[in-house]
Length: 83
Length: 155
Image (cartoon, rainbow over all chains, first blue to last red; front, side, top):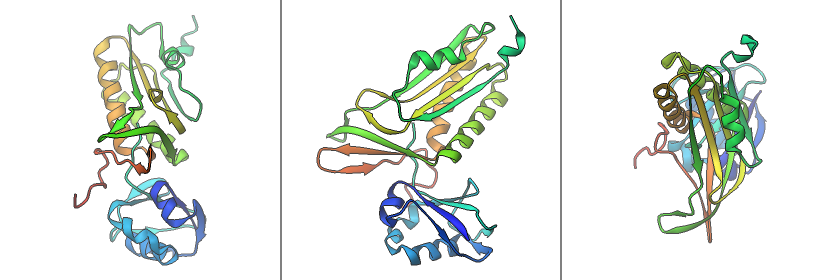
């Protein structure tokens, strides 16, 4: 079980800011995205613009294998606009 | 003067209250430094012909602070003479002409602090998880920094 955090446009599309999600311990970034889109189909429109932050490190939506621990934080990161 | 009081420090703050240039510059002043360089990011009242009413910022707080700390660490590697670094970013609603970000850097001579301030703001825009929403009269828009490496795919 991981904590999923939503920000900016992704929070608007998902309708939540955070929730817990049950996922396999080992999963690719892309597979994780697919799991999240199953719960929030409206997120599909931003697929090409987002990255993840897993344990506060950026991860592209690709084939990278994630090794997740219970309680890990996974954040959906739309294009940033600080400063 | 107690020398240990002047160890190089990073002052990082994300807050919803109005930012203060005086406060941020005073944080980095140091007896060994002859230069304090400053960047202030203020909110513009227009974008592509549309009137901007105000901005709203949100942040992934814990990661934003961590990423800003990484920027400070990089600054110290590139410009070892840099003394103190302060980065204050405002969150929530920011009215027009008010500051959304203030960055101050002190160093013995001016070249390093001027370069370090530019590096800080450029890298912040590329890597710190903070988002800006521009509120217009009839609509709003989540902005995307051109520095963001994963945005603008296919555009």
